[in-house]
Image 1 (tube, rainbow, N blue to C red):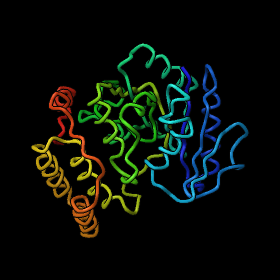
Image 2 (image 1 turned 30 degrees about the horizontal axis):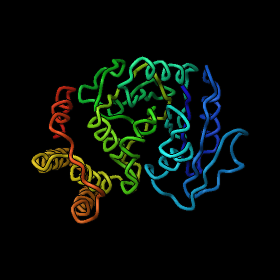
Image 3 (image 1 turned 180 degrees about the vertical axis):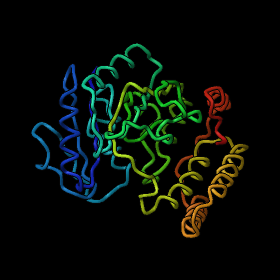
Image 4 (image 1 turned 135 degrees about the vertical axis):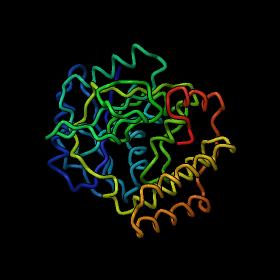
Length: 291
C-alpha cells in the first residue's frame, strides 16, 4: 500500500517539525511521502530535501489545512492508498507504525480510519480525552470506535473519495467526528489502536483562544449536518447540560453561548442526516449519537 503523510504547521515549531519528519523517514517498508502544509507561512525551503510543501496564503484552520494536504496527493488523495495525519509537535516513537497501518488496512477491507494512541513523551501517560470512546479508563485496550483523534490517525483515501474531506468551516473542533459519522454512515469502520503511538506533550484543549466558542458552534453544526431531525434537540440538550455541570468560568460560558447561537444562525454546509441503522450501529459501538 502506498502511504503518505500530511503535517500542517504554523511555522512556530521548526525543531519539533524536523523531529517528526525524521521519525516518519525512519518508518520501515516503502518510504512515506510527506507533505507539509504551511498555514499562512512559507515552509518551502525550510524542511528536509524530499519533503513536499504547500504554502497557504492564510491560516485555513485545521480541517482546511489538512484538506489542502489531501489534495496535494491528487483529488481525494488518490495518488496514495493511506494518509497519516500527524501534529507537527508529535513524533512517531516506533519504526513500524506505517507497516502496522498497511497490515491493518490490507487485512480489513471495511476499515476506513485508524486512531492512534497519544502518549506523553516524558510520562508515557495517555490522557482520557485522547481515548475516543466513553469507556476510556484503559487506554491500552484497542477497539472499534465511533470517532478518532485529528492529529494522530491514518485514513484510507477511499473514504475521502466517497464521503468528501473534512468540513473547512469548522476551523477547529469536532471536524473529526463530522468525518467519522459520514464514514460510518457509508459503511466504513474506525479502529482505535493502542499499539500505534504518537508521542505528544500533554496539553489542555482550552489552550486555543477560540476553544469554547468553536466547540459550541461546531457541536450545533455537527448535529444540523448529520443527525436525524428527532435527535438534534436531544443531542444538543445533553451537551448543554454537560457544559453547565462542568461549571466553566463566566467568560468561557459567555463564549460558549455565543458560539451556540452562531451554530444556529450561520451556514453549516449541506445537511445529510445519517441513516437510522447508523444510529443503531453507533449505539451498539457504545456511543449513541446523543452524547
